[in-house]
Amino acid sequence: MTRRASFATTSCKQTCIAKIWPYNRPGHKTNPIVPVTQPDPAPITRHLRAMFGSRLLIAAVHHLRVFETLRIEPLSLAELRSRLQLSERPAMVLFPALCAMGLLAHDESERLFITELGRFLIHGQTPNLTGYTGLEQSDPGALEMAVRLKNDGPLDTTQGISFVKEGEGPSPMDDPGLARTLTLGLAGRARHLSPLVAANLSTRQGHLLDVAGGTGYYTYEWLLVNPESTATILDRPAVLTIAAELLDEFVQSGRPGAETIKGRVTFLPGDMLTDELPQTDLLLAASLFHDWPTPTCQQLAHHFAAALHPGGELWVHDAFLNDTLDGPLAVTDYSAQLFWNTKGRCYSRAEYRSWFTQAGLEPTQDAFPTQMDYGLIRARKPD
Ligand SMILES: C[S@@+](CC[C@H](N)C(=O)[O-])C[C@H]1O[C@@H](n2cnc3c(N)ncnc32)[C@H](O)[C@@H]1O
Image (cartoon, rainbow, N blue to C red; front, side, top):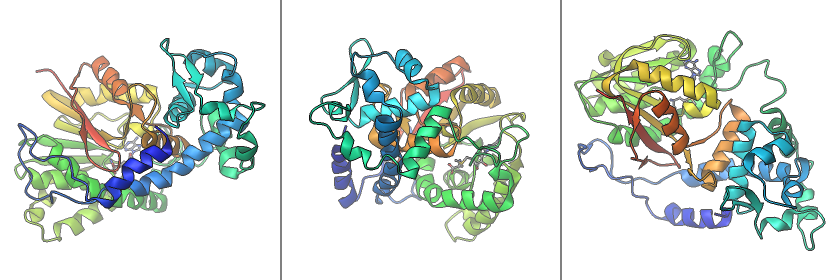
């Protein structure tokens, strides 16, 4: 879908009060605490992330010359990657984005080809728009995007990567000032989405492990809906300092039941990649996998599966690519933003399901949209 068409759909949502995903899903209790309607802020994040999609477009046309490479014949993803010398991650960010923009498509043999629209981006084609797009080719963001695509990330990683702690190297999440900035930067999103997530997660008496829980809002909201349950929030120590401050505020909010939450939450400072995880009934991975490359996601899926009791559930709250890897545009733009800022990207539900199956879990086919182009999927550990 083109950006224009996609935004046109959004603008209806923008002006209407979007209906939040039904709380009365069969088998799930209605959550009386969450208001039934509130506006979806997705247009704001879509416009923000469109900048990263623009950088991909300019880099593809002028610095990687994707359209020259494909002009003779359609190519498989593997062949195109090999000719452009792109690693898996940048390829899985760039080509779904160009498909979502309507510039490339897959033929019946899964080969990528240039669409009629995309032909305007072939140098030497008459008429073409490469002179016009070329006016932006020296934009610093586009130049840097080209570098990151070719290098699978920034050239200088000595200060560490946002939202990521891996191994012994420095991490912004272990620096008190940066951890505060980055965690509070996510607080508004978490505050808005957490009641929707809590309303869709299973309602049960038991324990929730919120891995890489950040602000902790997802846990606090779930505990409000599940007054007999307990929870653990695992994150880096500097992040949990902020989560504890936000919990104090939450407890004093005057919301019914909020005063009971403090005694039901455990903060667990640690490293989710290497530490043994506490056993749990539900495990929430909110905006977690998208910070990591595929092999780490596979490793995390095994690690999380091992932490679940039989019959326990792994829930993922994230933005998902189409299984056909051709959109949606809002998510390919988000994937470009994550590619720029983290070690990850957006993944399709099919990719998640394959990791969960390999880890011995049983993924369901359910998909529960929340807001801001996010949704929930889940997998169950067999009894
Ligand atoms: C994108 S944030 C998501 C936070 C929260 N789940 C949310 O949705 O708002 C990723 C979180 O992962 C945490 N994290 C990164 N590497 C980690 C590690 N090795 N162990 C534990 N937490 C880690 C970061 O500190 C950060 O809070």
